[in-house]
Image 1 (spheres, rainbow, N blue to C red):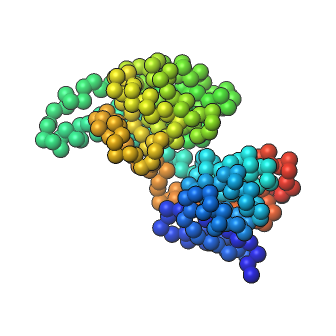
Image 2 (cartoon, one colour):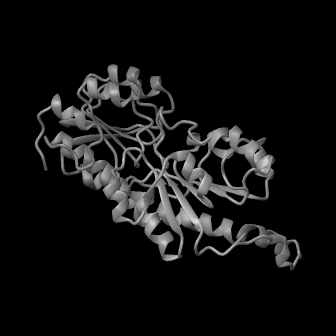
Image 3 (cartoon, rainbow, N blue to C red):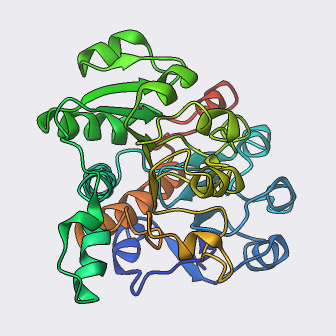
Length: 330
């Protein structure tokens, strides 16, 4: 009998070979399932010592019904699928991969910014309609000297700031959890959210999804944005109030949007966003590169191995658990 049971609750990957290689360091039974509901997770993982998690809900109910659970490791930066408070109460380590896809997401966000600024998608569509006329893109403004506002200033937006500054953009940020000295290191000015929205030509959303950030970009914020402003979201869809965004676009309060993430994914077929020429839509792809995917899979599995072998993981999320547990530091 294997010493530990590790369950992957759900996954979209073609192969789990990187996870298998990492988990081979310990004596584990690796169980692969595709769960969508709490009940499915509870049934599949009732004897699990560890969970690898992508989208399936790891709620309080799930955690309370998995008596052997020691660690939940999530694929990605966000942990919105996990009830972290319940996990901490039940001495379950929550881990993520905070340095994953920094280049991929920052590159993607900047690519969307450039596509908005230079009207790349509009021009492409018109040429394919046999309309060879640059005037369909009017107005286009020079990028250098414009202002990029970052909502959230963690590792990904910090990486984006450096790339944007190389193009001559002035970068400002809103993040109440980041000290001023960190922003100063990147030559970025910290502002209040309203001030950032009113002065930015491009706004790129990087805030994690939690109670405090859900719907934080809504009518109040759109109403103070420049008419020439574009909003870009590569974080989580519900950080933007989608109905407020649709209203802002329909009333031409802002110039457009580029969205890699949405409130509902896949996007509903009746969404007004699908019919808007000034909206660029991607299928939650900013994270992806071959290298990033392998790195993510290995690091997510390594979090589990760390805990099962008596160590705090490198990417410990619920750090307050150290008051309850006595694992070793790596």
